[in-house]
Image (cartoon, rainbow, N blue to C red; front, side):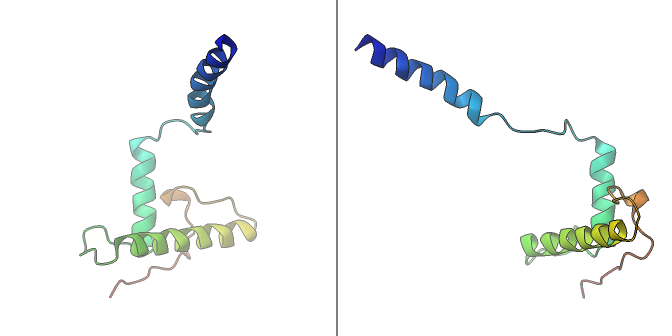
Length: 96
């Protein structure tokens, strides 16, 4: 019985530590968040507009940014992680 209690206690202590083990790139700075927002806006996302389809709209803009990053990287450029590094040929899509 004592061994069972010890095993349960050990499992209770170990499970949260293992489940919390996530890879983190560190804290995100305000400038990084702002650069990502600018990049999404250039891809057609309008945060101030009426959000009838919020998840779909931002996910579509993220997909366009990712596609532009992939196209830019496949042509020998570095991945455009910030708005300043975004390719000049990134399409601007109107939400109308």
